[in-house]
Image 1 (cartoon, rainbow, N blue to C red):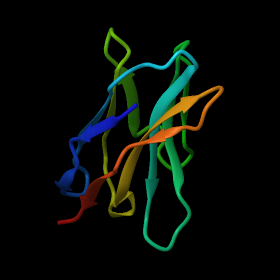
Image 2 (cartoon, rainbow, N blue to C red; image 1 turned 90 degrees about the vertical axis):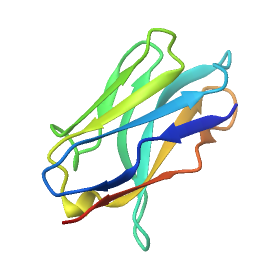
Image 3 (tube, rainbow, N blue to C red; image 1 turned 180 degrees about the horizontal axis):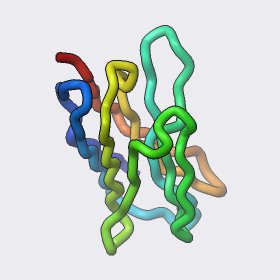
Length: 115
């Protein structure tokens, strides 16, 4: 399984950005896909996940400002982020959760919120 992320970059405060993540395959024990983020020197933080059944979970710090969705094939998830703040600056990692095997992580994409 390989996860391919795209969409990071520089955005001004108050702006919006959409990240996407495509998985090369959907394993049999697939459970969920989503995003975590990491700021150097801080603990990684859940952004959002969407399960195979469509249940969505949002991290407290982004609730109300982000939306996760997926394509009809279920192999690509989209992270729409609005009202971005400098505190949202981080490396965003796509994750694919599996029930019976180790999870898979993307390489990460940098999001920088700055004027």
